[in-house]
Length: 130
Image (cartoon, rainbow, N blue to C red; front, top):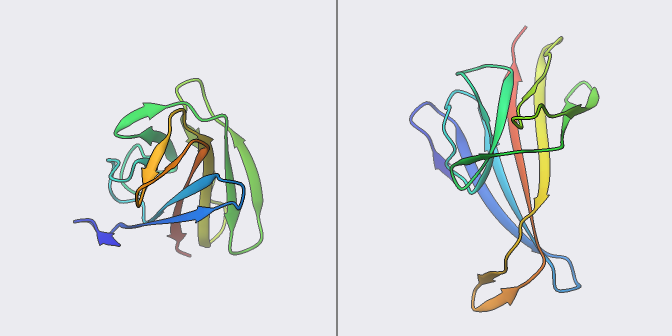
């Protein structure tokens, strides 16, 4: 994990699917920083904002859908705009979790093993106060 200057925290994990595929998870807690650090990341367009863009290796990419879950069991699937951005309402206090998955073309080598089927999943979570 690494802490950003503004307090955002990031972590990465990998999981094999048992059929030779690899999923790489990119998690972010916080929405104060407006730049991408992880390979795949949902980034707020302004500090503590409710509009997010998806970035792949520092460049904006389109996302079809972004799933939203909250600690109050509120779930939504948001359709991304043409530029890949999504805007969400935060109608009640609690933790919000945004999630998007993409399959990236090209193989990845991890610990000396090559994986042809690679999926990346990015999450961004943040707390909305009362």
